[in-house]
Amino acid sequence: MILFISFFMFSLAFSSSDAVAAVVGNKIILKSSVQEQVNMFLQRSPSSSVVGLESSVLNHLIEQEVLVYFAEKDTSLLVDFSRADMIVDERFDFFKKNLGSVSAVEDYFGSSKTEIKDVLLKEARSLLLAESFKQKLYSGVSVSYNDVSSFYLSYKDSLPLTPFRYNYSIYALPSILKTPSLEKSFATADSVFAEIKKGLLLMGFIVFILVETLDLLGEELLYRSLKRQLFP
Image (tube, rainbow, N blue to C red; front, top):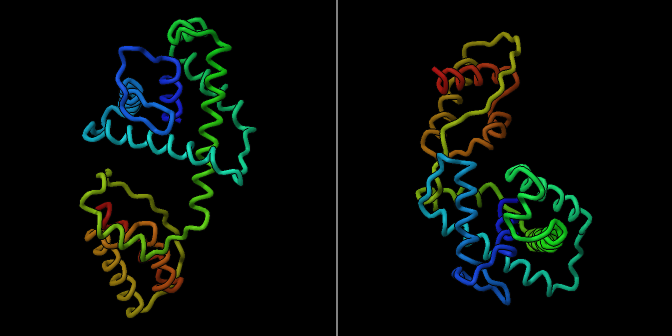
């Protein structure tokens, strides 16, 4: 939705002194529009890195305009515009909340409430059009575990850093384990954790590995071992 706000600001706040950042078909993207979205993103996430942010924002804006451009030419595309009015109300309420009142919104954009909502409706329809076209493009695409692993290993050095965080659940299953099963459970837990530390195993696939490699009685010990290593 941040992208949508930026499109709207560009549509109303055009100035003859503004510079053009990009042209897509018959649409232009202004530098002020890019900067406005950068500022808005930093307000919401002040701790985020600004390195490459402006370039990323511009690329997203261009992508949206490209999607709209081709979506408008696709006569077979079916778009549900019933959400447009809801999006308009949400966006106008967002502006009113941040600026304080309806009159403040009108003063900020130099347009009446009706004119603002007309632009919002046009941009909302473009947004829905782009979303529908993207869904159509990706509907026949499937991604396997090997595809994800290969991509990660190829680009892991260029992927953005994320803070270390873990989400886990512990299920206490009373059981009586013999020594061989006990050793097997701890060995598997150590192996899984080692893979995580090396970056070769994605957290989303741990549950799959647990089910495939352990029996029901061994799961409790695996969770306990992982908890001990992740949160000593």
